[in-house]
Length: 317
View (cartoon, rainbow, N blue to C red):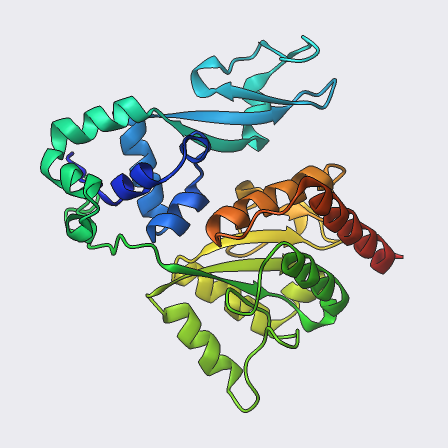
C-alpha cells in the first residue's frame, strides 16, 4: 500500500516544535483541510513509517494528576509519574485523551527518500506540488483529490432553543476567548445568527455543503436536544456529510443518554464534570489551534473560565 501524503509537508515546515509534539486529529483536519478518515489514514501511515508516536494522557486514580504515556509503555501495571501509585493503564487508556508526537528528523528522512522533489518545492514555498494528495488504500483504489491549502474553519453550534440560557453562557465564553461572528454561527444568539429575511434551512444547507470551508459542528446535547426534530436533522446531516464534530453535555444530561450519530467514545465534555476546569482548558487549546485565535494571558483565562463555571452553576440552581 503506497500512500502519498504531501500536504503535511507545508504544515511541518511552517509550524513550531510545540505543535508537532502535540498533534491531534482535530488539529490536522483543521489545518490541512481533510476529513476524519483522511486524518486517520495520515496518522496511521506516519506511525507505520515510525515518524509519529501515539501518546495517551490519563489521570492517576489516586492523586488525580495527569500522566502522559506512549502507547508501547502502557500495561496493566503502570506507575504514576507523581505519586508512584500503580494503576492499570490498559483500562484507563479507554478514556484517555490522545495526542501524537512527530519526530522531525524521521519526517525529513521519509520525505527525502520518497518525495524529494515535492519536498524541495515545499521548502521553497512553491505550493503547487501540495495542491493534490493521492491516497491509495486496500479498501479504496480510487484516487482522492484533496485541496491541501488550509480551509477557513467555522463553528456551527447545534442546540435546542429550550436550552437558551446555557447556550448564551457558552457563546459568551467562546467570545471571550476570541471567537466571533466570522468563525462561529449560533441561530439563537443575536449577532451570531442569520440575517433577517434569510431562510434558516437554506442557510444551513449551504453551510453544510460548502466544500471551501471546514465546518465543525458542536452538539450541545440535552433531553431538549433529542426531543427536537430540527436538532436531530442537524445531527444526521453532520453524520451523512462526515463533518468534524464535538459534543458537550449540558447539566442533567448523562453519557448513558447519548444516542444517534454521536459516538460516546469521542469523549464528549460534560459541564457537570468534576474536572471541568481541565476540560475547558482543552476546549480553549483546541480552538486556539483550529481557529487561529490570539492567545490570552493565564490570568485572563483563569477569570474567563471561572466566570463561565459560575454562570453555569447559577443556571442550574
